[in-house]
Image (tube, rainbow, N blue to C red; front, side, top):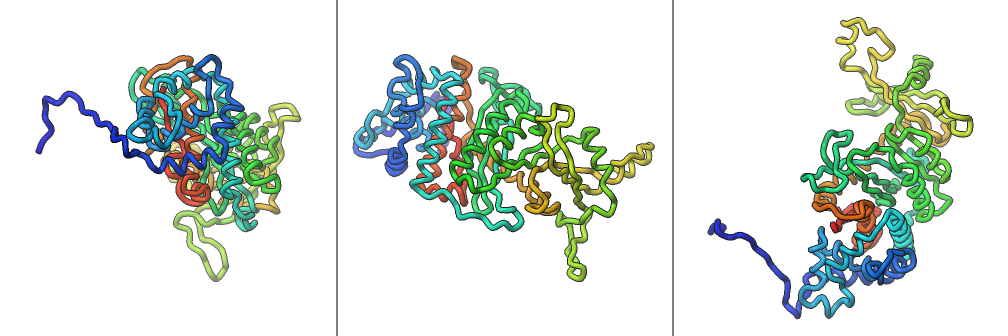
Length: 433
């Protein structure tokens, strides 16, 4: 058989009055109701005019649609297909839900942040999210908050906020913070969807603060938290947001003159070989035979700023052979960095908690957030809104509504599964207005 070339369009409707297309919504939305999703939205959302009426039921409808696989406002019609009206009450029309989202301002986005945070806490209480205290071991007993952004490629000139960012790809910028324990996979605890052309650290101070607070709420004040970030967030604002939230910091630094001077001060005998790709363990000496080595030196960050903004800690440096060393020497560039490439990060974790080798291995674990980015791009973030809608702050409501969806979706199989195995691809669904 072959497709008819004269066929202009196809459509399918699930309209049998005795069947429902997504029976799995029943336990998922029952759990959401037990955790108080609608009540929290009613309490914290203050969207004006009639468009904001019954905010709790509208948020619950959006969540239900996204859990069932909807990725556009039109797809919300699935809540009215077949016998869905006999199972669920007050399922709103897609146009009503679109008008609700369009009325959002950034203040309402922050209110929805509050809903998502409290909803996650309620789910944790119902399902026992809090894992057992980790052994100190190589991780120092820390729970990790990883912060990073990613460019989500989009197509078409009508996509609001799309632009060319640091990757030179037209897209939107998603800033994510995940919570990870040594025994659990990452759980998204804070997020922001931004213009594609914005700089990585934009809004990071607020997001880091929110993520650290949520980590303490979920795990308790007795759990030490380590915020790991790359060099884009090496600045006073993001670092102080973590410290103010009673968290330690491990952040990659740029090789500016101050950092280069600190590296140059490290004595040759201070370098320790580490386990790294292609390293070999020598059982006779009990050491690694490796081309990669680490060392550290005391360091004070942000010395160009006032005393209150400066932060004391350690500069941990990893060096690996520079594959371009010979060519550099051939042209007369005989400098400190001819033979080695240096990767340095600043940390406030004391040496007696994480020594130099352990601190380096722990910081490299920050790469786990890239798995979250890859999962999101291969699923929920693969389809972003195609239309311009007003007001502009509404653009960022998608990601925030979807955090609520993600928590429900992950918890439908037990929130433990979200924290200990599968990121599921639905942590961030999407609703386009």
